[in-house]
Length: 322
Image (tube, rainbow, N blue to C red; front, side, top):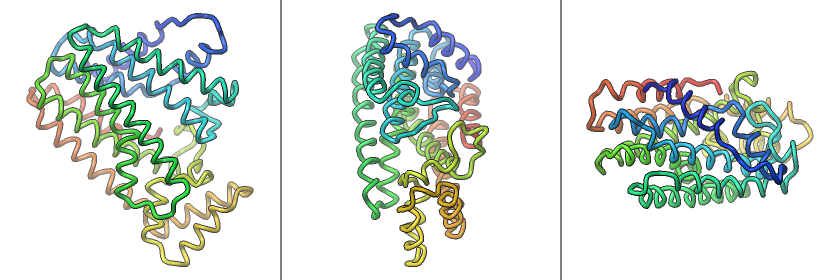
């Protein structure tokens, strides 16, 4: 199974999910979000991890779908918390409906993700549920750290990396590990694939921070500079603050207090980033984590030919435009 085959397979499985028709206001936002053109990397990774050890991957489908439903639940609530108006080029749920709908429909998605995971074969269910629940609470911890950082100017790089590990990377790691579990991989290989997902997830988030400032809006699917406008503590802002002199810090503080000049604010902060060379720092760190991911994958005890797909996918993710 290659990535495109895995993607096509999970996309069809997601489209086949049927939710109750009533109350429509509860379920329509769920189908709306899941029908958007997303990357669906997480369920595809689950199936590809299973396929490293087993030719047939149907037993991993419930876990793959559960991760995608859970991921979209986090997006629905993240957009609300961040007041993000666009998701994948379309109005976010809280803008298309309202905030209360986004809260309640998101809660329903969380529950539905567990119901979906519970369809896994019984002999895998306990370990999958433990992994799923541990990952879910870690993602909540990461979101809490992210919110705490909003009111802090002393966030260190290590704190930020731990936050994105929890908020973003642990899910990619858990997707890989859950696929390996269903594939009957040994514990060492399960953990190596988890590490692959963790390192790739951190690199993925740093790339996301870069794309928010330096991406092409026609391909990114979200407003360019959105993180700057809401003063989000990204790697770029944290890195800039930690290397800035007093004059640079004064300029950053000034623009962080500006809320009525969006274009000027994005331009000024981006120029500050360029002056402090934080784009280069971010790219170097992203590449470091990418190579850590590749090293973990290399150690997995299966034929090298079977790992080419994941190697190629990791490379594509590091060169993505959206």
